[in-house]
Length: 149
Image 1 (cartoon, rainbow, N blue to C red):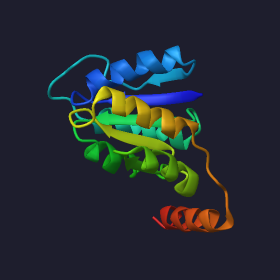
Image 2 (spheres, rainbow, N blue to C red):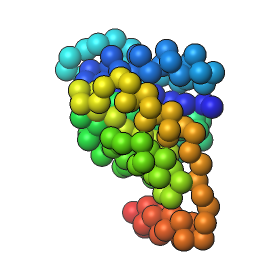
Image 3 (tube, rainbow, N blue to C red):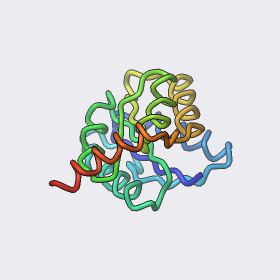
Image 4 (tube, rainbow, N blue to C red):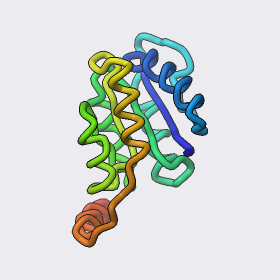
């Protein structure tokens, strides 16, 4: 799968470890930065280009990491076509895709340990949108809201 990933200083270490593992699993990774640990960098500088790539279909799914994951989720959701969520549990990691067509997962590099983060990402990547009528109806409502901006 073509996956985009981005992180600021708060998620840099986790991002680097996830990239290594995801490549081992055969995924094609596009790294949107940060490319080095800079303590005062800003998550929107990395998350917004990732979110745009997800929305444009340049990558199939996105992973954004900042200190808590909250800022990454806020920034990513400002891009029309992106459905991002801060995820802490495996149920939400798959349910967010299956029911809500989530296409970008946000993680907290300072609050989510590596093993859990890897499980969350794997679960997110394996999940597929269910495409049931009720889920499609809800997704259309979101899309209509975005186009009304």
